[in-house]
Amino acid sequence: MNYKKLSLIVIPIIVLILYFIFKSPDIKNYPPKNHIVVAFGDSLVQGVGSTISNDFVTLLSKKIGKPIINLGVSGNTTAQGLDRIDDVISRDPGTVVVLLGGNDYLRKIPQDQTFSNLRKIIVTLQSKGIVVVLLGVRGGLLVDKFSSDFSTLAKETGVIFIPNVLDGLIGDSRYMSSDGIHPNNVGYSMIADKVYNYIKDYKL
Image (tube, rainbow, N blue to C red; front, side, top):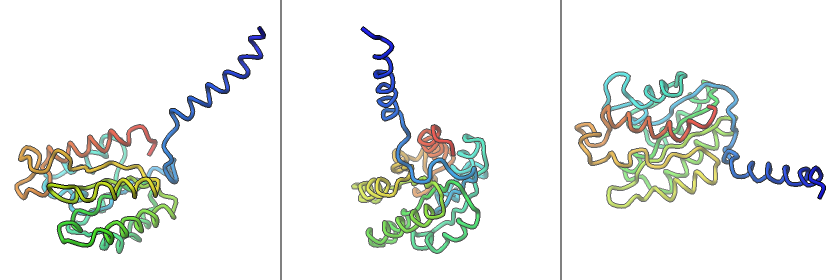
C-alpha cells in the first residue's frame, strides 16, 4: 500500500471536515474593520437601575479589554433608534451592539413595525461594513411573542445573536431594581456575563 499517496488524499479531506465543523458562523462583515465598539439602544444600554459604572456596557467593556461607546437613550423605541442611526455611523465603529424593542412592547407598537425597524437598523449598519451584535428582549410576561421573530431576523441578516438578555432576571428582586423593569447591579452583571460568553470567541 502506498501510504504517502493515501495520506495526500486523506489529510486534505480531514482538514476540510474540520473546517466545516469549527468554522465561524456566517456573520456579515466579520471580522470587523476596526476595534471601535458602540452599544446602541434604550435604557438597558444606558444602564437605568444601576449605580455608576455598574451598567452592563461598562462591565462588558472591562471584560473585553477595550472601550465601548455608550449610545443608550432611555425610552427609545426602535423608530427613535432608527432616527439616531447616523450618530452611530458617524463614530465609524467596526462593531455595534444593538438592544432595542422593549419600549415598543410596552407602548404596544405593532410587532411587525418593531421588527421592520430593527431590520432597517441592522441592514443600514451592515451597509457601512459594520458587524452587528443583536441582543434580544422578551415580548410578553407569560408568552414571549418576540422570540421567533428575533431568531428569524438574526438568521436572515447574519448577526451575532444573543437571545433574551433578561431571561431569568425579570420578576426576581435579587436581580431587578425597584421599578421591576430595569436590572440592578447584579442583574446588569449577569447580562454582561451572558453577552461576553457569546462574543468572547470572536475578535471584535
